[in-house]
Amino acid sequence: MGLSRNPVSRRAAVLITTAFAVAGCCENPGDDGHEGSGGAQTSAGSGSSGTSGGDGGASSSSGTSGGDGGAGSGLAPTHSGLISIQDISILGAPQAGHGLTVQILFTSAKPPRYEELPGQPTGCKGWVYDAQDDPPPPLTDQGVVTISGLAGGPIDCRFQGSSYVCPTHSGAGQASVTAAEMGTAAYAVGGAMFSAADVGRTLRVDGAAMSGNNGAFPIVAVESSEVAIVANPSATQEAFAASYVVLAGAGPVPGNPNDPITSGDEVVVAIEPGGSTAFKAANLGPLVAGEAFELDDASQTLLGAVPLDGTPMTLGCGGQGGSCGAAQGTIVRITSTDGDVQGASSFAMPPPADKQVEVQCVTVGGDGSITVPAEAMQLFQEAHQASSITRIRTAFMREGVASATNPAPDPPNTVHALAGHGILGFTSP
Image 1 (spheres, rainbow, N blue to C red):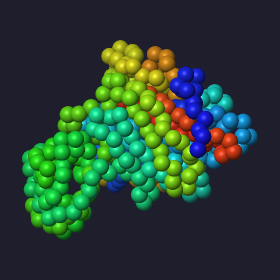
Image 2 (cartoon, rainbow, N blue to C red; image 1 turned 60 degrees about the vertical axis):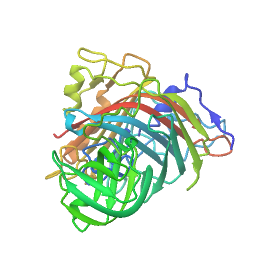
Image 3 (cartoon, rainbow, N blue to C red; image 1 turned 45 degrees about the horizontal axis):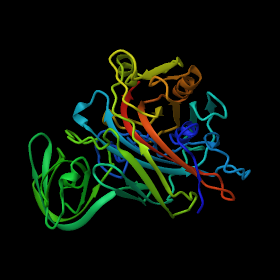
Image 4 (spheres, helix red, strand yellow; image 1 turned 45 degrees about the vertical axis):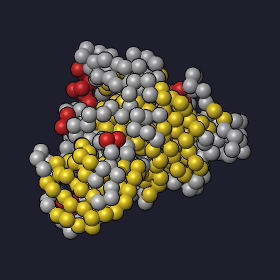
């Protein structure tokens, strides 16, 4: 299974670039919430083709320019891979909290429409999709992914349906739901094994007669091994035979007291090749996760008000009012949709009706800022003129990186692992 390993030096840029194409981070989100790991109908994410999404997006659009050519094989990459592990929060929505967001995006490789630095791994790249004739490439199953090195313990992620999910435990039992204050509810499940480590995860429940009691809900507290407190304002009193699963990495959780990625965490990602076996990777890492940061004042304004006039845009954490924790790289990822958002939450990202644009920008080192050039921003301007953009999701992330590439004679498919912190902003033009 010999793998050609990319050291975290000059190759750092390569690792990040093809990786984000989610935000990053990305994914098969739920009705109006982030489901980076198949889960909660919370308020947001940074993926690209569902209704709200993780930080990488269901369309991992990575092209061929970010790889390393594959040990002189002469072959072009057939697939790109991203494993994104983030503590995500949402600009202007402290009530949404923050939480671990895991996105695992293995897709066919697709060259970008625009490259700021052709052939280079850094700079900005852009993809334009047509919902009917040229949609984003779908996610594929490439085997079990195990993530270790986080405080909550290792998690295994598997492809289920059309995306990866990361269940920690599951079961069935007689359940009761009791509505509580502040939009919370107590879910008591006989025989469950809830623990303090589940706070910040997601409880997915089926079997209730009352539709509002079914679904995926952020776990905000655990009262006992059989009682979890979740955020569910639609809950009503009911007893029923339930099946349940607790999911890790499903996105922000209101009032989450835990930082799932702490300073100095060293993350290791292992892939047990399976599915269509486009990747032959062993362990990636350990990589030192990017630390928490504060956006500077100017960037906080722009993150929720992305211009559509084709002018360049600079985002960063190093200006007035900001602070940058240690990180190997900085990533900005911008995704648009022209889908119908009427009646949806402010964080919903419905599938595009016609046009979708994704732009990702990468820098390694530097001062924690990225400028998205006019040529990249013009992709949004042109799409808006063709079919009015209804929402833009922008992710700003600070990352640690690891990567591995298939050796010859296999196609030089590269899988990247990113770990760190990110913040999302939503623009409604």
